[in-house]
Figure 1 (spheres, rainbow, N blue to C red):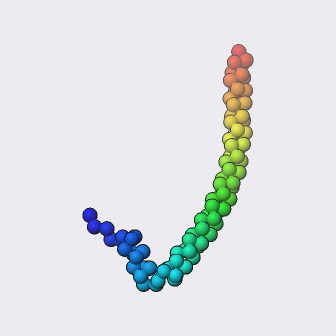
Figure 2: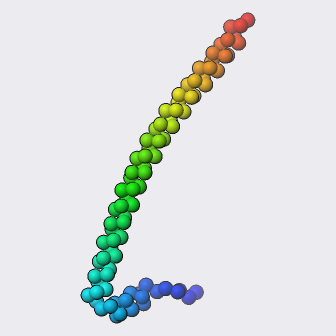
Length: 85
């Protein structure tokens, strides 16, 4: 199986083409940009996680309220049927 892209060959060619100093500067810049985007993405994920947690808590309280209403209504109906005699 032939690989289309070999990192070591590409890296070597990159350093040969631009020289060590400029290539290292590019690598540092890309690493800085990568770190910035990773931090931004982490912050965005934390924000979305907090929003999701709040929404789930709201849905849970709605579900508990509806379950309570259902069971109270069912118990009253069954009690009415039982005591009707």
